[in-house]
Length: 246
Image (cartoon, rainbow, N blue to C red; front, side, top):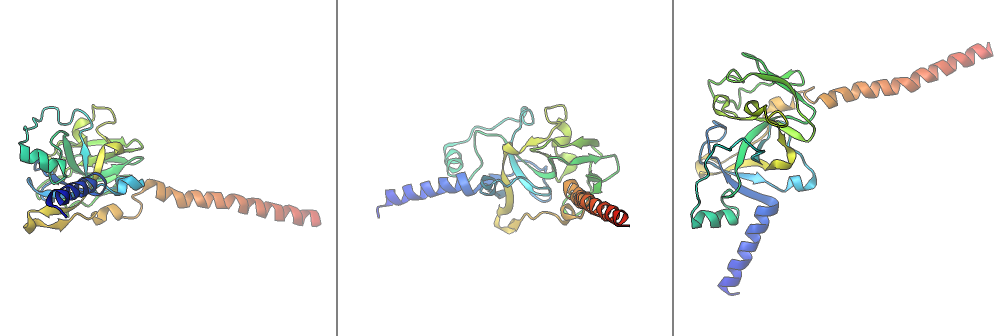
């Protein structure tokens, strides 16, 4: 097989992988320290959203600027090599302005953080010691809420709270600073470069605590009420039958 043909096939495969499977993104700021450092390359899973998967609490996600978040941020003009690497998916897009943050709350959640207090989601306190930047407070630089996250949107925060212009700082925009799920490119699943920093990006345990999902917490109670109605009717029928028989 001739070399030009092999190169062509490789480019097509790279484009397919970039479009449907995974893409590399470069970390442009310090807002996700120490989880991510400026200059890290992360691999972003773009496949699962194609199957209807939505962002979940605790995930680190890459998303397009919802509008107004990066309006004062200059975008350097990429050179030819950077444009090519962006084209095949080995570098972030040279045209689009993307951000990376951690999902703290999803559609239907109520999230808030008072001064000197923890971030709470649906009344449950988050233990963020495993990922928040050492020495940071959860929100003392910008307390907020309570905010009810609209359906189909997410509330995001950087791990370096005192150096992250996240959902807290854009509450004057539509959606109170939340991000539409449609703007999410995908979930960052691993640090791929530099090699010495290779690591996966799992969801912290605090986001799996019981009762965090308000809808799930209400479901058993709702089922109990639903089940109680037929039982009450059945008991009433028995009592009526006994009285009639007596």
